[in-house]
Amino acid sequence: MSQITESTTAIVSTDTTLANTVAATFTPEVDFRRCIGGVVQIEFQFASAPTADKTLDLYMLPALASGTDYDVYSQGRNVLLGSVKVAADTTVQRISIPLYAVNVPYAKLAMYNNATGQTVTIKKLTVSARKVG
Image 1 (cartoon, helix red, strand yellow):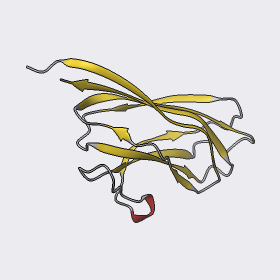
Image 2: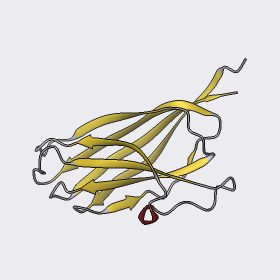
Image 3: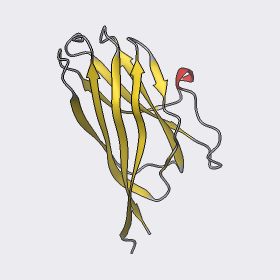
Image 4: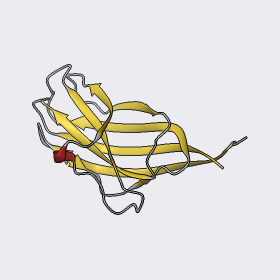
């Protein structure tokens, strides 16, 4: 029987700015081999108050087994990990999105600023994964 033998945390992004209705794909890949779950933590802030209850959407862009060819956000072959309704607030907001078993060896993450009406800064985005041995 497999046991959790490893927990890894990867910083995927710091200080990335997203304009209204724009998506950004974060460059670092995340190693999901043997991943049975984890959490994505996002810390973000708006300079001007956004439209309340609009969302920031987090996507996973899977890779082929080689870990070199990734889906492209604009092509729509991505996996929605979660959406976060934003408050009409300019203070730093922090949220966590749980990850369940991930069935890809590697992936990149993308964030879409879904009609908040304002530019957002992703201050920090981290992925913590639990792996089995």
